[in-house]
Image 1 (tube, helix red, strand yellow):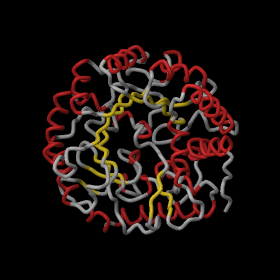
Image 2 (cartoon, rainbow, N blue to C red):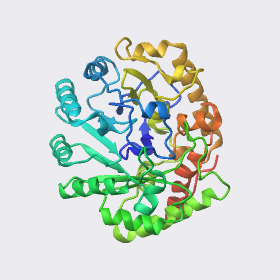
Image 3 (spheres, rainbow, N blue to C red):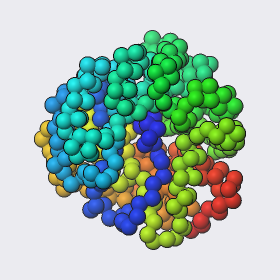
Image 4 (tube, one colour):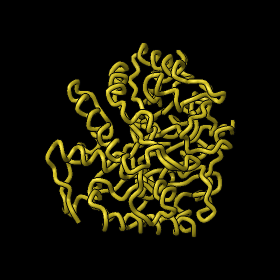
Length: 406
């Protein structure tokens, strides 16, 4: 899940001066999600990807990477004044191998250095089990942001994060994190909250503190893809998740540590002006071509990265084209794109009409809507309640900010 990417995952954004319902406006591109390989060396119980996808050992040909970057440059999506982040995702990125990345970064520099004056943000979200000294040297050389997916200490992590043979993964992830620390490489940690860990705020805080992480990030287990039922999907889940984040936030304030979910709400509130026409909430996931997702074989999509690799006959598996044969702007003329954007726009409008949290959300996540509700043209999801509404309520309660009622 790309909520595994700390720099991206569901931060609240405020966009000045554009109509959030005018989908004729594309981009500018903020996030380029690249799938170097769909293969993953782990078999986490809550993963949304199919076993068929995770067992595919194919690698993205470097020709596809170069073609992607060139077509991005040739398109109207790129704005040199808008920071672009490249994220390696949708599988375990390090499985592709260091030699693959050395060539990949040569291509990135050749194609993008001039456009961005040498300032290109790239990021790994990794399970950490393959990190060695050579990887650390490369990460430092290329100034790559790193996030490690680990669910806390061994007794929590190894419940769901297992190898393909059913063994725990904490020991190898711990070794990788230690190498990062020894090499002076800052990293964030993403932990998935489940019914087994939701009452362990103190334990998880102590773990994050012991790692001295740049930022602690928490994804609430989702009903998405092949993980059809979340363990946090009961009537008591809202209170459980709220208690977790409230406790974690109180602990973090004592040591001035960062928690992504709370920090993102506070960041949005700095600019928030309820009802002010100049300030329009949006998130990258329901704005066309703020995100571009490219699979290992060149197939591309936009909106939620989690849509990439999923099956859906109605929307052509969410694939809009292939970088080897199609231009990004041309795909907006296709029936699939028009139906997707129409339904997503309807869903955002419904959220604006019906949800008191809209001003600090911008209309939810398409991937969660279609997986939980069966339609993009829908509103509240369990993910929305637990990952968006809970942090907003906590911040408002602790800082005395009222929620705007519609």
